[in-house]
Length: 160
Image 1: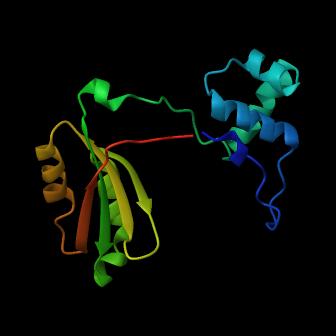
Image 2: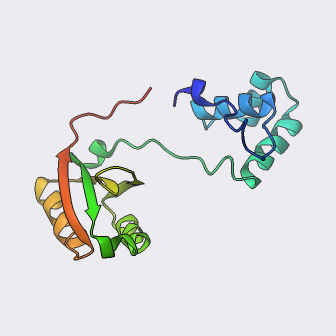
């Protein structure tokens, strides 16, 4: 994660701003979510008990939503990655929440992005073989609420 993105962008909102020390905590956790509280406290200049309390507050406020493992899916035998652009039918747009919920239940789904523009959703999936990609489309995207899909194979995924 690019830690330069972690600044308080809420200047125009009515929400209370984050203290600089909270932003520092978020930057450190964004770089290494497994850092010990003691090391985190040392990096941001707080006592460990104070740091732990601030992290708990950030979690309770919903600013920290969770901690995640970065899994190498290819090591698990998943070698085919696809991004599927989905355009909903006019009737389907009113049922988009149900479609998204169904996609999120599918084990192949890595992410679902609701987007603007010509498409309504981008669905990122992983399968072991190309036939799994085809089966996913047949099983989860062959619905009258979906007007059109366009699938792109992912050859690389790069992060800052």
